[in-house]
Length: 125
Image (cartoon, rainbow, N blue to C red; front, top):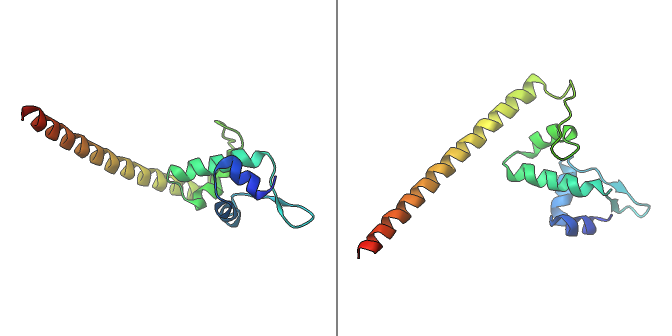
């Protein structure tokens, strides 16, 4: 399929799909006219990339782990997959994500406390 079709099927702009290619996350073939030619599996791959990016992972980390995430809910445990460098990188990333979760939780709690206080005052008025 052409890049425009992949964009329509995934909701990801063509510009972003080209960026994924530049980051070595997508590997389209080329048609005789030089146009990108994506296999059907690219739809799932783009959805996977979006999910990983949305969860806060960097393209560097995604590039290193995506070869081991071929199918939904399945991870290939290749012996060469987890180097000590990648393990350290993933631990740091998990810690960074946890800090974001903690910050979001604190903000949520503050907003809910504010709403509760305002609603209590409104109920008393």
